[in-house]
Length: 135
Image (cartoon, rainbow, N blue to C red):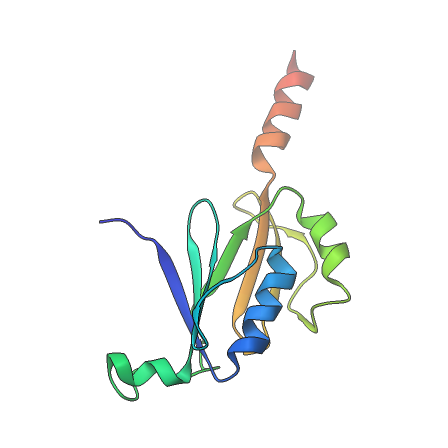
């Protein structure tokens, strides 16, 4: 088994795909007017319109109704990305914050209210700095 993607169902696919293209810098590959994918080296964010839901099972997914999943992207510098996104994102949940588990994280909401986390691991840098200081 191999995990390959997560799919968001939305009532406005053009708006949501455009948002993710802007915040990630990844160009979407469109399958048709109801389905697009943003492919990265390690996973794919698929976005489908509500018109695709009945193909699986009518009523099986509802747009803009996620209260449990956080979509996460690893980035080289979360602080620099935050500066770039200030004029693009309307709903930041927090500014870049160093988490207890060692990631510097930026949490925001997409136009459908889904949580998106951009993060940069900082533990390795901190540990290297401590090791160098101990020498």
